[in-house]
Length: 164
Image (cartoon, rainbow, N blue to C red; front, side):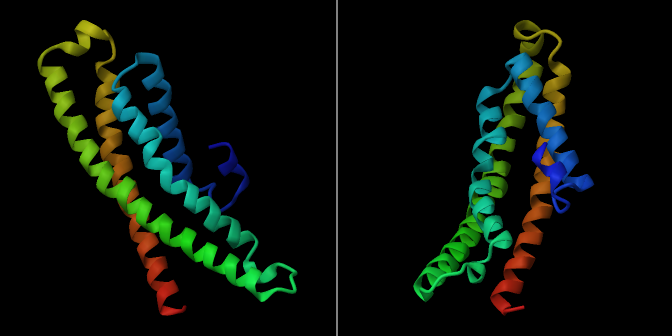
């Protein structure tokens, strides 16, 4: 979140809102101790794709062709690493932030409905009902944002494949 402030392309209303909403989810997940299984996925596991995004972004700032080397094999290796990171980002984003998000959100909704119907929220964690409803709404809103970003990712991938 804080790092995004220093990068213009990351300091957008959409990105900062995303980070703020995710921060609230994390903060109150710790406060109430609700749904740790889901919190682990939505706040951690789904971010796995970010590892490959960071590597790919590194090459945006330092393209392989900008390295001063006498060995073309080093540039070729770095170019392959860049392409591999981009491809893995697309695959892991789709797997964790689209497919996994949909699947885990459906489980979250089923569990939440049961917890609310049975009065478990009041029994085991009084005052936390609002937060469970917040989590459900964030699952939908942030899931929609993942789909929006995936569309942009696919559009960019098509550009790269087409050679634009």
